[in-house]
Image (cartoon, rainbow, N blue to C red; front, side):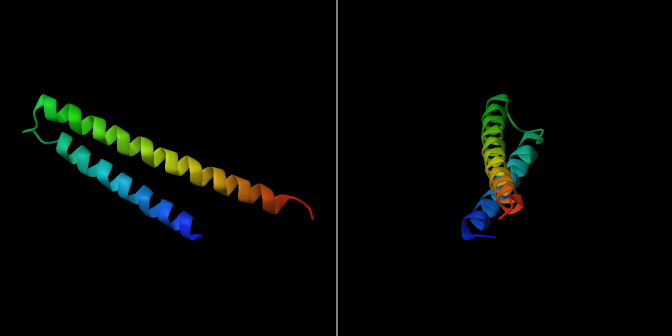
Length: 72
């Protein structure tokens, strides 16, 4: 695993953890409608960014897999 891939994995894990924290806030019975909308938007942003990191990792994996399967 390269240093870039390791950083992306950490960033991905942090984004998922942040989304979980935001989900817990949304589950609170004391949250206002206005606050819940803000938390929801932040959660969607975190998940979108995590998905982008996942897509990038998939592209890297697919590219490396293709490179390794080509005959010499």
